[in-house]
Image (cartoon, rainbow, N blue to C red; front, side):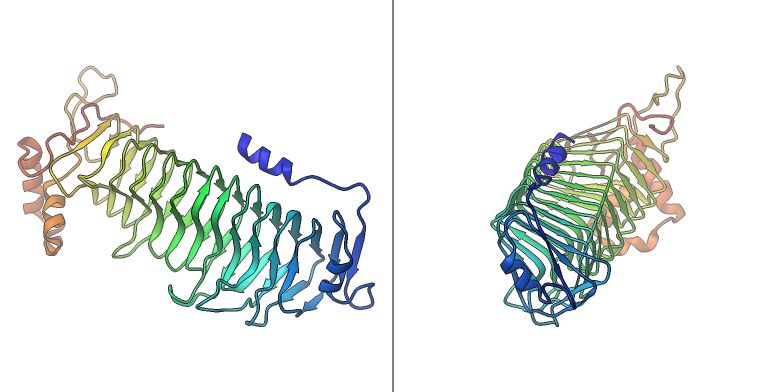
Length: 409
């Protein structure tokens, strides 16, 4: 919260001598470029209702670009619509449509380069290659925008909100769909992604690489091609997000690859092929999450170390936990497993018998996917029960020594 307030406070600097320059038919200015050329730092360029086709507009002054209802900037499928570089710039209440497309250049509806204190708020982006593209910038915010992409193929679509090499950024309250990745972070630090709804994107709802000390909070990631990927990052915090129905052969709610010292707390994973897929992760805390109705709730590879999984609820999943080896250096405790059929004689809420969450059948499928044809057969059930009594194929040390008898609140 302190980080969000710091970013927002830096965006709210006003100038006491600011002017308003109206743009539109029968106004002082009929072209946006002309109004920007006449504006001084602190002024507002007020864009009246109308369709504006001015090619690429470049903005380097500390001004506000404000649209009235019905103000539309059109890239005609050929141009990057607005290029911003500077400090103290606001872009608000505008509709951007039909930005240019290129396989060589990252054309965007709004591109921000080498900037600070830039606010992009309450805009609509329609049929964009990249909607918002920000690079080498700090203390900027992208808030409450409606964003939709070209919805072509993974190779011919850009990202909804694309950040590269940025620091102290805020991405909040945006509705994003139809892009390659809804939100893309690369080399972004000390930033927050909060209360966004990223859905029906071709690849990832969120793609996050080489970005440390970031948080994503209360977002919804639904029906994306492969889910959410967080890779090669440290000290990432993920709290109260919803990962819903990211379903397909290689899909998952959340992929964690080579990340360390992160926290995954109070998230909901519902009806995903895999709730969380963990590969080469270290010291990740997975706590107080809900895993419901997924193929695998959690798949954790043998290359993961010192992760802790506790106080989570596992309900209605085909497999609670899967792994690809017998060596396990992670700790499970105080989770609720709906498949647990132990007892609690002293009624302290903790099962008296340890629970082994990896079934023999999941280990067989891991090595021979064709064995899935035997799913839910009597023979599989019998073998699983025998394996739990005398583990031989499943990792013996992957065990919840203190399973909860009731769901964790």
